[in-house]
Length: 122
Image 1: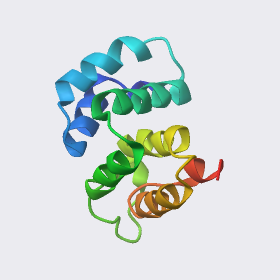
Image 2: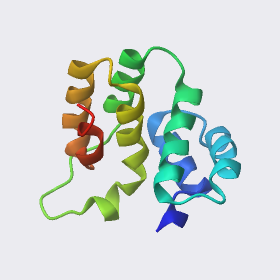
Image 3: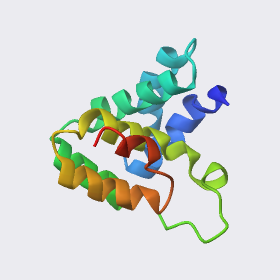
Image 4: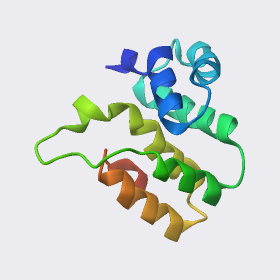
């Protein structure tokens, strides 16, 4: 399962979030090679921070706007939105000082993936 978080997934996530998927994948790929899954997801989140820059509130607002449609009942996020896990980790790592904004983002994320891990620090 850890191998899912690779250059291809970085390109997919980058494209969805409106960043240069190839550049993002080039940043992520060499950093995840020997890592386990949570560490890979952390690198993906760090790469989002690197690529998106700016202040957290503005960045997370832009990310939320691009999460995509809500999963229909019975649709599993492993099948449709597993590539969004780094967004959850991004909130967890960088959003603790903005609890209201972050909790709203977690609520939005929960409609398409899960905010289970991101909500724990709050």
